[in-house]
Image 1 (tube, rainbow, N blue to C red):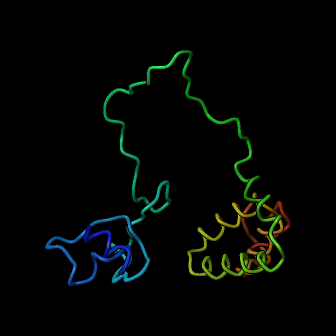
Image 2 (cartoon, rainbow, N blue to C red; image 1 turned 180 degrees about the vertical axis):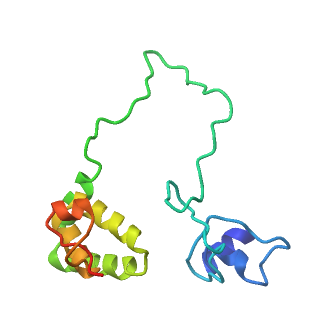
Length: 164
């Protein structure tokens, strides 16, 4: 079909090209990619295409109607996974990387997080420290965390606080 061809040839933002644009503005959760003409910013609260987010944005829609369980024999239960450490797998992956890939990963985290507000940087350093203390420390140092206040998880891992 035409839309598949355009998506393949031009990229996911083909509807933003003026020649392809529909009469009404398309509202998608697509962000970045080839041929992106604009980012869907709405002033102080930019459109966030994921949830949960500290900036608001999308929320999961309430379930509409009753759940219908499939016909199976035996009990059907819904329960949380028994996983207690949500960060272990990411830390294991980091530790299996060669040194040059670790360097690239740290560089990319520092480069992109350097564009974020401080509270987001601190939250990400906390997450990265929970994955691997070395990763959290290296990213914190790259972001310029210094001497006095820093996040609790970063302090536990021996990362100095952000310099003012």
